[in-house]
Structure formats: structure tokens, C-alpha cells
Image (cartoon, rainbow, N blue to C red; front, side):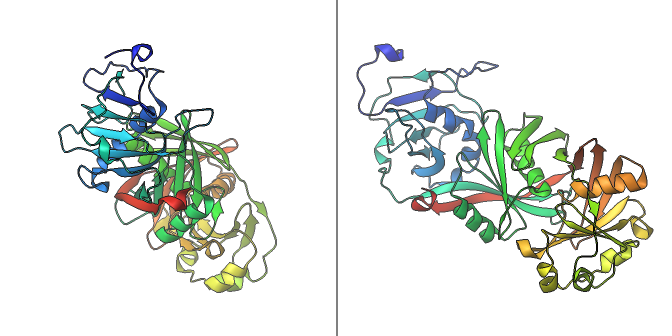
Length: 408
């Protein structure tokens, strides 16, 4: 193994070997490691976990851009990987655009492991000859997870899809993916320094804030991809959102959005099929009832409700009767956003928690969303912030195969 300055002149592009056998602990990445190798190893755990994405001993394209600087501009090529059948697997990686490539050996399963880089791997390394050309029309592989949020059991709470990315896809493509998933929200996130940018899409539109999909994204990151992380910060349209984990409980730190009283919106009581005691508004219109059983029994006319001006309609009432063990109940309807009824809505607590906190004279509140699937939330009002805690469970994980031209 020789240092870079003493190697012989390479072919166009360069070839590297990464050996994981003697990984120092703790590990401080060598700044000399090529960018594509660093980017690949950051997400290697997810890729190897899904080795079935690629046929054995064949190349498959990831969604990671190379970003090497062969000239003044970063290489826009996408990294391909070829996972061997050894245990631990030998992983070849290559960028067809700039022809940089290498091998990672003895990788033991941590998504952030990276070790010494060698510079003189033979050019006839097994399998490198099969790298697809840069003009290949192969599909990009995007991991996808479906998570039930605000619940501790399968098939309850609010399902959300989560797609970890390394770079943003075109907006219209993310919207199509969300429509294909046909869940109330699909979350996409991209790493930025030690934080992540996060965006949410319903089947119809991109939204500024979503609680259950944020919880789902944090679950994927903290429980599956980076289990040693105790917390994560997301950058979003609603500012920085902090999520911490305590065992299997995730706590979301969201901005408070206290509602204000408003007159009855035209057509709302008719659309709901019941007369609320009062109306409030922040992001959503809030219909306040006196009896939780009325909220449970609502059967709105979705066509009429979708015509009511506003982002969404939330129905709420104080806890009583069979809901006497919680402080308030709610249901959430957003037919104009492609979500007739949301099973469990974290973002609604940004307005409901401050309202019920002031009305009940307490800062820690338990909420129950009495939708068909149902879910429970623990909320705390802390100044101008609202902390929303809940659990999550993984339903399934898989892949999306997107034609290369669709992601360009």
C-alpha cells in the first residue's frame, strides 16, 4: 500500500480499496478518502441490509451522486454497487461517469464505518469489468419504509412512508411517489452536515409541517439506520425540528401555533353534520364540541368539507366518559389536501395543546385521536414550543426502482 503521491499515473478515474479489518475506535475519517467512498460508506448499512435489491454478483445503481471533483465541477454520476456472496460481503463500488471505483472488504455492519484507503488495487479486480456505462438506462434504487406512528402495535396509529435520499429528487417526482404510496404523508430526507433536511408530501400537495411523518422519519433514522444516535435535527419549512429518543419513545419539539376564536365558517356545521360549541383557527379550522361522543360519531360530507375555506378541519372535545382518561379527543379531516381523515395527527397538537393547556390549566396533556385506527399522544406545552411524544413500529421496508431519466 503506497501513499497517493507515490503511486504510478492511474488510468482515467482512480481505483481504491477500503479494508475494514483494522477499524480504529473511535474512528476519525481520513480527509484523503475519496468523496464517493465516504458517501457510500455512510449509507452502506442500508444498502447491505437491502442486498436483495441487486441480483447476486451484478451491479445495481444507488441514488447517491459521486460528487468527485475530476475538474472544477463535481461529478454528477451515480454510484453503482455490486455486493458479493462472501460473509462478510465484498462490496465493489464504481462511478460510471468518472470511472472512479473501489472495493470495501471486511465490512461488519455499521453504517458509519470507514477504514484505511489503499491506492494500488489491480485494475483487473474481479467484477469491475461489469460496471454499466454512464449512459445506461438502469433504474435508481431508493429505499422506502412504511412506519405506523403514534402507536406501539402494527396496523394502528398513522402510517407514513419514509424515503431516505442522498440528494433531492425533482419535486414532481417526489409528488408522484407520494401519490403512488397513497398514504396521508410520505417523508423524504437528505443529510446536511450532522442534520437532515426533511420534506412531506400528501398524495396531492407538499405541506409545511407533519407530525406523524416526522416521527416516522426519526424512527427510521434513530432506530434503523443510525441506532447509536440519541437525537436528530430536521431542517424544514417550519424551522428546525428536534427529535429525541428515550427507549422506544420519541419526543418531537415543534413550534406552538395557538389558535384564535373565529366566527362560524360558512357551510362547516352542515359539512360536519353537527353544531360545534365554538370555532378557532390557526393553520387549521378547529371545531370545539362539548361531548367527545359527538366527535366520535361525526360522519362528515367530504365533498362539502373540502369546499370549506382552510387547510383542514379538526374536531375536538374534552375527555369524558370512556375518554375520561385523557384530557381531550380529536379527529382531523383534510379532504382538500388528499387526506379525507388522518388517523393520528401530530401537527394538530401545535394548536390543540396550547388551547387545551390554557383551558384546563395544565402543561402536560394526554390526547386521543378517535379515528378508526386511533392513536394516543403525550403533549407538553413549553413556552412557544410543543413537545409531542409517541412510539412507532416498522411495517415493512423495500425499494423503489425509478428510471434514471426520471431522477435527472
